[in-house]
Amino acid sequence: MRITDARVIVSCPGRNFVTLKIVTDDGVTGVGDATLNGRELAVAAYLTEHVIPVLIGRDPARIEDTWQYLYKGAYWRRGPVTMTAIAAVDTALWDIKGKVAGLPVYQLLGGRSRDGVTVYGHANAETVDDVLTEVSHYVDLGYRAVRVQTGVPGLASTYGVAHDRMFYEPADAALPTENAWSTEAYLDHVPSVFARVRAEFGPGLKLLHDVHHRLTPIEAARLGKSLEPYSLTWMEDPVPAELQEGFRLIRQHTTTPVAVGEVFSTIWDCQQLITEQLIDYIRTTVVHAGGITHLRRIFDLAALYHVRSGSHGATDLSPVCMAAALHVDVSIPNFGLQEYMRHTAETDAVFPHTYRFADGYLHPSEEPGLGVDIDEEAAARYPYAPAQLPINRLLDGTMHSW
Ligand code: EZ4
Ligand code: CO
Image (cartoon, rainbow, N blue to C red; front, side, top):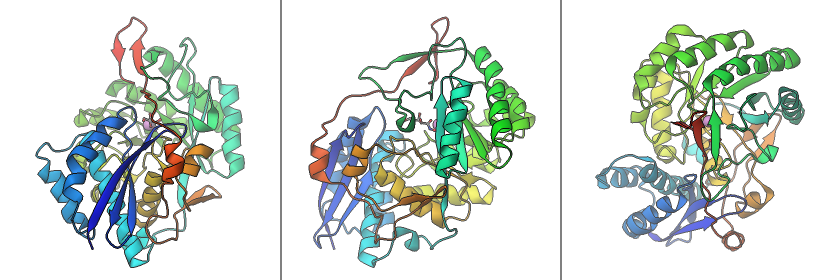
């Protein structure tokens, strides 16, 4: 069996997605998500110019060898553009292998370790009163875990507060919009939000919060301590993680669990975080961390150190990524939680899939392969529209992390 063709499909059914479709001489095809939010065309060009030419003629069964070929063969290792491109190829090859075997991919990964994949949704609103309504909406839908974000009094806009609630989409303009940030206002406000949410919903509901790389380690330690009475499942991305040893300081001060990893590309980005047990959940994903092959390597390392998975699953991770993530989630021993933001009807129509939500769980497809495809005719009706993520400034105008 040989790879005879591979196509990069860029489409914007409500937001931009980049998808790789690999075709074989047997007529079997596979799909992989290659979407890197706000940098879509960089990955598309990487695939078209540098990857697809070396795929043609290769044996699609050689997944590990192809991964190593693209990783070591690039010479310029790692980085989000390269690793997203490798992820797309790897995901598509697992899809093909599943179809050839006549098995859903999770069976090739060792079979089920659980009955369903616990997911969390995003409750967000400007005010605490409104966010309570949003949380109850998720509870009514059956969710067992909810991420809670609100506006911060005194700040005109902030991360994670949607205009269109179920379809929160941060990449909102061709040129980056600007948010204002005050760490002092934020740290004063957040504990009062979780006091209200916990009092209203009681101890059973898993609550999460995304700090989105806004704090220093000692500030994150203060936040974690102040949230301890409300038993969060995790505090996400408390600080930018380039400095992995910085997390030691957070650890020394708080028992609020820490989740990190949505922007990581490889195991090397989290090696110290995992082996020093500085985090509780590793949030790397199929699409941004080198595909199913590399993600499993990260999760296997994490399992040795009591770290569980908590993969990123925002709207910019396409249904192809979500389908693949669920096969990993259901099979690994150290699964924690899976983020799940519903896609728009237009997106769902472009990516027909058979994973399904019920009672707070997502269930992977039982079809051979990943159980997801791209409808190329439908995709062609939604041309690429430039959209970038926002930036963030302190009140005095200083650039801050978004
Ligand atoms: O900002 O997916 O946990 N989820 C998040 C997301 C990210 C976007 C970036 O592309 O932080 O909303
Ligand atoms: Co996040």
